[in-house]
Image (cartoon, rainbow, N blue to C red):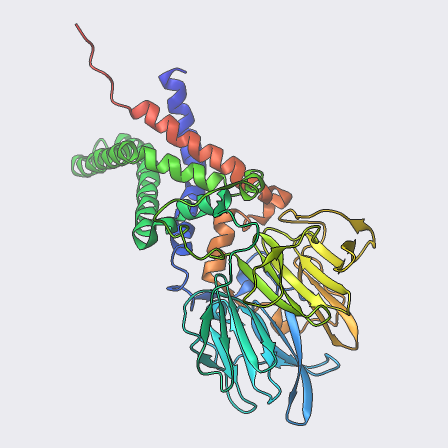
Length: 495
């Protein structure tokens, strides 16, 4: 391809896609520092309408708990926006969040449980909390900082479920004992290609130093984008200011400075930038599914290289009261354990579960379980190994689910009038009208950054948001390659 053609490609792709590249960089830097920005949030009224809560959607409710507060009975609804108290007829709702840290990201509640004595416990992604009948929520030290995914009460034992370990406590629930599960029967020490590429792209694979390097690359790419625009704009200003010698001299200096920064930063970081663009491009459909289904050995000396076979793989835990054993949901599928100290055994012919994780894990009766995720909702006859679609009543034999199915299930409740209430990500729930004050509950700055980084914020694209990263990634990669082609140092002619 001729140099002039490369130049045109670089110029117009860079100019037209520059705002999106800058947003990629800013959002990526924010995503790398979730704890630091966890207290920052934005009202949903400033976002596209699809981001507002309508009919209990968007994971506003993940589950419920019927509880007694003295003589009165009520139902607690919990999810992305914290905990809300409703009367048994679901006609009145009020906040139940007093005591949680500032910021809706700190109120992303995974589970709420109540002991026989009436004490409440709540697990958020980043903390464990407890509450008496007349107290506010208070933080409870479970001996770790890892993210929590579930909460179980079995007898008088409280089990906080982390992504890698279990944390077990007994009354008065002040001390927690970490427990590492045994390696499952199908364990090979491998990790998914998706997780590996994801951690490489964010820099987390190499700890704090890796994240700082990726952040610096983001800042450099912002500088390259801005100086590229200046390089395009300033020559026009020079022509307009020929009669003003002082102004023209200043403008020329800016022109040369922007060209030097754009040229040198682009050439010296070309390889790292290209690698960053390719890894990010691969993390969204259609390549996402292929990466999620491919296993590779963990890279030595990195955070993936762990002696814990369940490192960042645990998602939910349940006790089967009929079979007197435990069920464990993980990123690798469903497992059965005779006890928490036994070897987990992979369950074959399990219901489809999205790679994004399980959201409904309820035992309906002796033989049947409700299994729900973004792949749909299924009735699982565990003993007979039969899975039936909850809505169509058709038998399914799939053993793994895509990221999104026809019905993206986010939560479930059976605490209102003995009827099943199904909560979905997009569709309204078969439930009472949602109070207006819940419609614009805030969204965390981290989640906004995630929506921008994945392209879901551009709702005007419709279904095109699913493939936005695929085409955006190609454009970024092409802009980098074309820029390198036109600014690559020429070889000296040999005599």
